[in-house]
Image 1 (cartoon, one colour):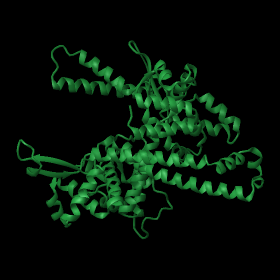
Image 2 (cartoon, rainbow, N blue to C red; image 1 turned 90 degrees about the vertical axis):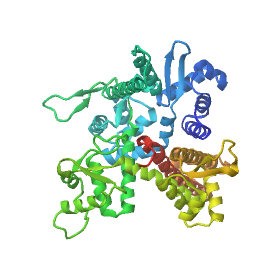
Image 3 (cartoon, rainbow, N blue to C red; image 1 turned 120 degrees about the horizontal axis):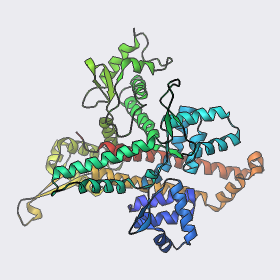
Image 4 (tube, rainbow, N blue to C red; image 1 turned 60 degrees about the vertical axis):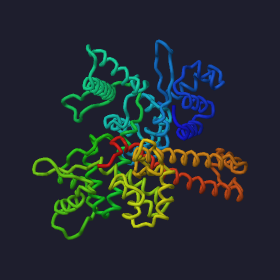
Length: 517
């Protein structure tokens, strides 16, 4: 089951893309957890045929897990992470166009959930927008680069269920009363087994090339269904955020070097990597465009790269580090950078709500740990009359937390010391819930704007084929209404993208942990 903000947002997303009936089924799954088909029919009040069709839609679009159990029969569970990723589909299509020059393949698969290569080619070739060979080459690149991955039975079963099953099997092999070490080893073996299965499932539908052919693997079977690998596209979003952070902290030249470093190491990169693969300065130079003028007048570009990289390699605020033989390789420290990005989101929210004094207090607590109110006022150079309401407001928003240290067993408040500190997991969780609520409000505002009587009639008229061919069929008033609606829609879309970027930082970059060093 999901919390209220996540439930509302996921239901809104599914309602906007699949209609009210499928959204009703999704809402029941989010509110009550995993259910069987009979339970879905009872809780939603839909006909059995309608509920079954809605479940098939969710499964086809990778929004639901389903499994067969001896006791409960077949049950269905909604995949909230996959549902929230649908807000990022526009970026995925844009990235596909930027990387491969053909966004039609990714857009088509996103529209259908999963497709076979023959179905993809038949639908694209019917449009005749590009040559068949162009689509074939682009499809091969997407599959071989893991931007499209096979959709197997493993992807339709909850990873948590598989992990619990494997962990139970590993514990069953322990003969005596299990110790803490044996339990930990059983859990590690189960996780390794699940990871190995997932890696093997990624290779289904691919075969090794012959010795006379170049490259590693190629798509082989036309009967394999492929889906979009969101994690692969998320790597590019993360790299853009890191590049922007370098540009904000240093300058454009440092951002160009960081972009080249990330591009040189992105072939084998993963979202869970704490640091990138090591790349040499020569590789970085090879990924910098010739028209990029870092600093004119220098003898060699490699000399400038070493100066820029060394500037970014300070441990306190490092973006990169050196390693390898004689420190000849450069590594991007994803873990350190992602922690700093999440902390920046926390500080931005505190500054927007309570000003610079709140940011000063949060930084002080993160640096020194738990502190009393009088000590915070003294170190932060704020009056006690100003610090007390500020601490109470920050605590009410869960940006900071309080620890009670009683002096006696009676826990008398007058004889209790209260220490303030920043609980990062709690703060990030609350912020993420607030961002989900904001995204839900944006979506509801967009729906309310579109369902206005005047706007709705103009939109329906503008979508007619004759009006699309000849816009002059719209009156001046209708054109003004349509233009005003498009401006409001664009503003809401920009706001949604900004909030979704903060969600990406707090949720998708949290795979490396949230605690500071």
